[in-house]
Image (cartoon, rainbow, N blue to C red; front, side):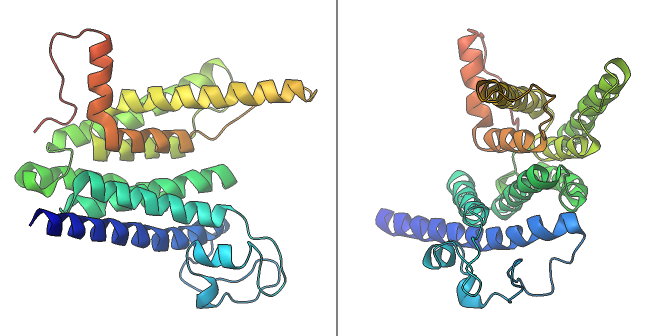
Length: 285
């Protein structure tokens, strides 16, 4: 019986990865078209260089990119590494969601959250925008999931109190909104951007208010490290120093994913380092 369960879990893990890769292929379409205000449904995908429609056998996630040698079959233009990266990353995240939550109502929802955060990351890196197509439906969906979690704890949702989710929305959006206003008022330059405000509000909806400060801290630490590294590289290359502006969305997304999978462990580790007398539950039932 135990062996059958292990085989079944392995099967669903593989299915989750393959499904994630397929969704990742669609995300690549969204990353290209959403900033250009183009439909993500039609027309069919085509080579941006020669305009030839991509056949189904040249559109198999990861496999086709490797088989074609990262080149278009017709014009031999290089195909960006971003395509297999997005597909593989989404596949791995989907598999991680199944490994973390198993077969429950929350699993497909958190897979969708992961897909949304991958989309946010690559659109923000390319276009410095965070698509409303992710955050606008994500905020009420996160609130609805906490409501389901209240009445059906076996659903697997991490937030099981609608007020926890609602406060997460207000705290997440409110903190970055105030930071943006203070930056504009005191430093007379652009702040966080309203897209980041909506993204953190969405994360608060899904992960609760206790996640907000941890996500901001992690995102700020990683963002600062990347910024300092870029400055050092620039100086070593003898490039004139200039202001560096980095999109914050990818760091918020990465921090949100870390909290989704390891939130309780992260809090327990921190409290252990601080020799806290009692454990604190991040996702109280």
